[in-house]
Image 1 (tube, rainbow, N blue to C red):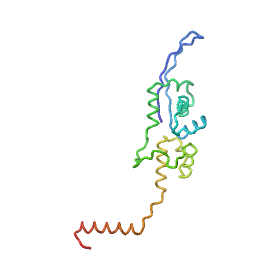
Image 2 (image 1 turned 30 degrees about the vertical axis):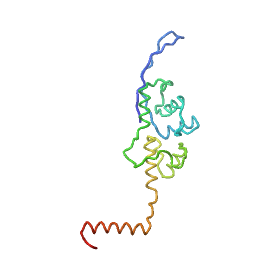
Image 3 (image 1 turned 120 degrees about the horizontal axis):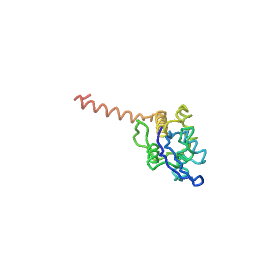
Image 4 (image 1 turned 90 degrees about the vertical axis):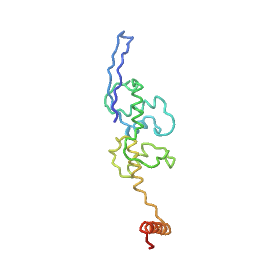
Length: 180
């Protein structure tokens, strides 16, 4: 979860001819499967697709990330450049301790990843839906780990096994200075 404070500002209401002061506001944001689902429902297209997002779509995603039930309508438009940078850093954060050898550059099958596909992965791997509130990068890592752990080990041919045993025996003979 990301907690940030949106700066206050002073506005002038020309109709009433008076200044209006907007106080700073603290928001709780969450980059999660729930946020992704809300955004895709609103804009009816995949958020994680490689295409560029408009300013309206990006601000719309930030609104979908907001956990607070009540907040000023214009709060996202009041974001400072520092607030926007904090959101960007939070979204890009790995949020995990697990490391993988080579990270895939894109989806191997060429599928567009949508919230429904991610929910499918949860069902397939029997992952409880409580994880829909996890940071998306953490959730993707869990799905990746489940995929790796559920793969059947490669079967080694009899010739490869025999060759490996011969190599190990040769190493041991050398280490122990024996002939067999």
